[in-house]
Image (cartoon, rainbow, N blue to C red; front, side, top):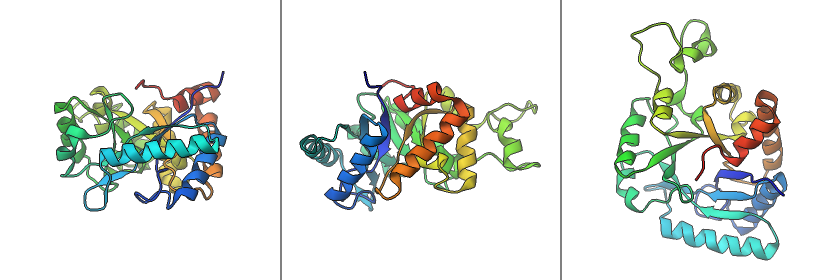
Length: 256
């Protein structure tokens, strides 16, 4: 029996954001994902007011259309409609009808890459009022989750970042607080493959070793070099935590 492998973050749907530019590119991406072994793909186009305004009904309709096409083409992927919500001042108005991660109460959210750390908790509180929890996309790429600079560099500062420090008056870290409050984190396979540079790759590995991630995503936007990225990223994960734990992570360690 084939083990489930879930891509929780993918820009597969054609021509609705900065992902696949047309149907043929969507099909190329889908074929790569299926060959890699993914069985379920969450289609998560951007929802950014004034830029990519992908309302839920539009995403659901496009996902259903794409599923029909994949079925006809014999590409064995189960598509799930979703959205990558941008954490900004427009998000609260979208929450009553927002798409969650499958039937769960989690929402895939993207923090601005250069956002300060104090921005994140305010948005998680807004989601909580609606009974929602954030699944935060690629935290390794966000400034808000970067370990603080200290003597010895950011690697030396990492234990303190998770509250493992000896200064009794120092605040518990942002990420530790979010994990304790029910937030979850999705890592990008491309980050592990070095797609965004060495610093982000090393940060992703450190987050992985600390058990931060609950699931993974391809965050695929195009087919070029996608297969190499997937296998390279997964290989790094296996080297760090072993085949069994890596497979569990690809299946998603939180249930939707």
